Image 1: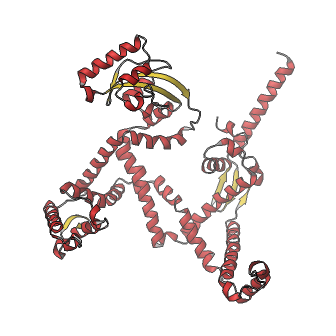
Image 2: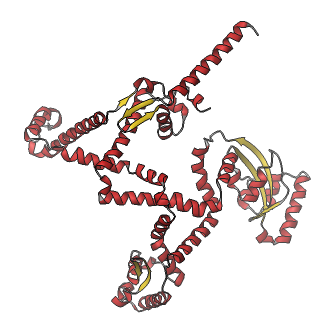
Length: 489
């Protein structure tokens, strides 16, 4: 190797090392500081990359200085808003407090209760990772199906074995799919199932296909649909696959759908257990009485009248179920039925129909109480997530309190001045006359107030940055998203 070439290699390595070490040195430096704390270089890059660019490094690297500066301002302003909300006791406003609780319960139930009590019992994080690995490859399988329900076990096995012998003897797979497959939809296309991921198929199909190579033909195997023979006609790399965290959020709904039957069973079992845990009873005597009254009133009502109006006050007050201070009586059932047109009302045939109604009415209360009992509503990550979703609400309340409510209406002189200065361009009629001030006064007032509000909002934000002693490192902003791949090694 010549000294010149060796020297170039040493130079390239040295430059790469400098860039990497620079990045390491930069990551803890403060991009911005205020009385609330610091935002580091790496915190800024991580946040903007995820929230603004969906983890697309190429797009992030192409962002302008102004875009980065504005995002940094938003990060700072967000923390100021949360601090102001706490200092001004925004959470004590009834509707805000209710909204926060609603979001906290929603997060606690979906991410805590549903995750821990249902989903984790059906599939694990390892299976999500397994699906992610499978999503690196797409398959184009063709199959021949012999339906066991249609032919019976013995005849179906005999038929699939016969078809398999023809396949290995050299008969064309596609022709046999057209003539023999009980899957008529795919059979007409030679058995082709289209491009799929392995995890999208039933378990037996999935297990078989991941072991095969392009051109392989499987031996007969059985699934819930019957006996199959599979030809793997093509395989390709999935070039659209993103990082695990991004794909994980897509995989979970796919697995939920795949295991929907088990999910529903466990969901209903959980509700049943909660009815027992919280001692919720459904009065079968009152249910029977209500159904009897409903049938009788429906039978005896006049065609032009609503049979639900025939229930007496005593009949309406009958309590069917209770949970804490909440009750479900016949009146609530009647009101629900009345939301449907008379000819399209659900037919209540028995106890189970009423039970499903009670479950639907009490479900959210049950989940909220259970989430409390399990401690989900006290979990730090759920509280922080609920708090972060309140940003828009806090911001609107604070802007109203400190800016909007303090923005004065324009004076008469300001309105007249605006009218005179703009009547030639804005208020001139086609015949050369001008619209009367009285007729345009409301629109001028709104326009001037909006302008005042806009300026007041800018002044308020500037004053907040001053009061919170905000400083931003502009030279450091220029260095963000440069050589970012080194930072991810």
